[in-house]
Length: 73
Image (cartoon, rainbow, N blue to C red; front, side, top):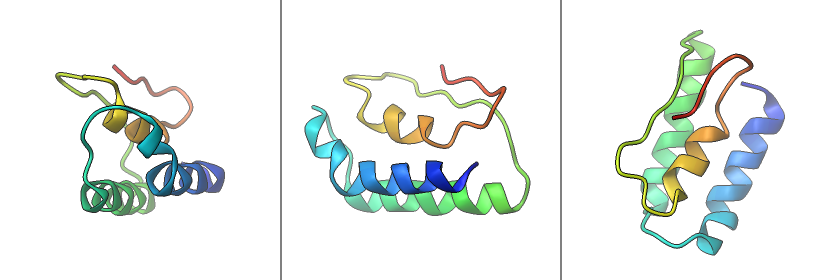
């Protein structure tokens, strides 16, 4: 994950996700960002997937943490 991705994820969680219909609690967004940062520090990589995407509010946040060569499904 690149620093710009972290910045864009934080920007999305603080302002952008309000522009997308659906439900995503701010605490859940914050926890996701912290988890993704911890996984990055630990060298954990891999694709992402979300089951039951409604408008993509959470998937958009997850996609901010994709590294080169990883896929979002």
